[in-house]
Image 1 (cartoon, rainbow, N blue to C red):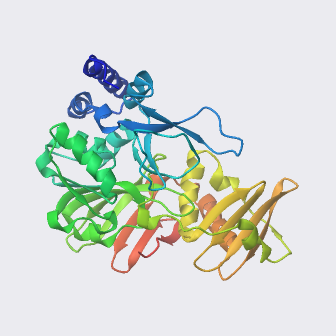
Image 2 (image 1 turned 30 degrees about the vertical axis):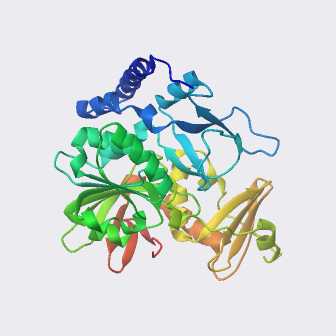
Image 3 (image 1 turned 90 degrees about the vertical axis):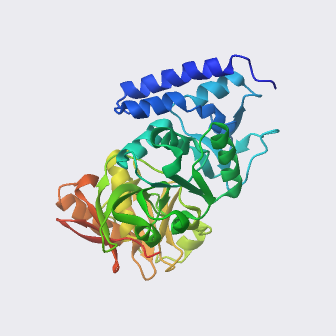
Length: 399
């Protein structure tokens, strides 16, 4: 398909409209970032992507519809300039955008993050002119382009673990006149050739703070990253690194999530029924409902991260009305089933998974339900601990 002659005119109009809407929502408090949004052509970075259909398939799986200019010019351009995350890859497999197919289910592994979150990320990192910046997770390159537009390309380094993704991002960036340093690299190890950095910002999530990132930040430098784990609990933290190579910082509020760094993705744990088969027959009554950590609320989002800190190797899945917990590292497991308005628990193995989560929920309630901003993450040679004045320390996994 030959692109319409008025593509760039349409794109400018939609870009200005998106910037205006983000400004009204309070996302663009800094005029320099608004100018960047108005300047960077997002459509150049997303020639193809997937959007979810309105209904799931007969197996309950999300139906993902491919969107390109060739398939539907209007839908493609409108989505490119909407405050929406655009999925560009599933399960590490690069789509054939010349002949894209509808997908049923799958795990997204690359995307163009919704612009409001990208801008929030850059704003929270406290960027200023003259800062050298390492971005972990180039993705489509759109967020990289915004940083280049705002700060200049010379001080921006962006790394991406997927070489095919980086090749496409590089083509779009260079085609738009942006020339940051780009490299195929695993964010777990940062990027030593360009160290040291004033700011390190991760567009993926880690189970704990990678030590290499602390070593690559200048004293007084800041690291913004999302912590996550196999329960899919998330928390963001802005760390300040001291001259001794240790760091600390408060958790940030909100319900932000990023895809896991590929080396930190959850392992496959098998059939939940197999785990449940080995549990003791006699259940006990749970002190808490699993909905405390699974509900679609901001508090549950926060609690799931705290619970995850207590059982860092556990995974959770719901089959019918039964909630299964499984720990592939220790071989521990638990199930929760509804019973007369409450929940019954069976658990076995060296780690009593739900008992540990209950202890965290008990302490959280006793402390008066403290929010994320009241917790501080400390990172030092002896480990990484989440601390609160009224709660026991919660360790993060060792990497």
